[in-house]
Image (cartoon, rainbow, N blue to C red; front, top):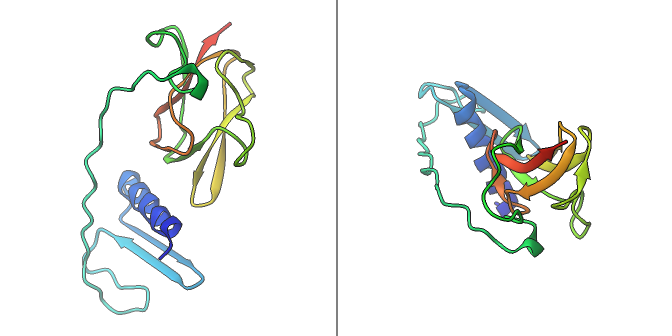
Length: 162
């Protein structure tokens, strides 16, 4: 299996766990995937299959390091101002600051944005979701590194509103 396919399956498993579903079936080309909480669930070919329990890795909680302003991460001077508005990830996925590899980021720290300004993309299973600012103001902090996996509700940017 390719590394990307394994990563996609891991993301699907995380969505399955977080979604409260009892069963998820995905079929695409030569790939068939069945995730079920019911041990008696039939496999995709109609036969019974053994239950496989996949334990979720414990979440890693780290203090966010303050990095240099040149990389755009942690670029605000000092702590996050509570008056700033957090723009959060709408769902689990991979965070991308630019529309395609090698392109400049959608926004930089210090840049003025409008409510409809596109800030980044979140990708899950080749489906890209555009994240808009939602408020007018100035980007003050980028909280995630490009290509990092983010959780739904995780802060991505902080904006000082007008």
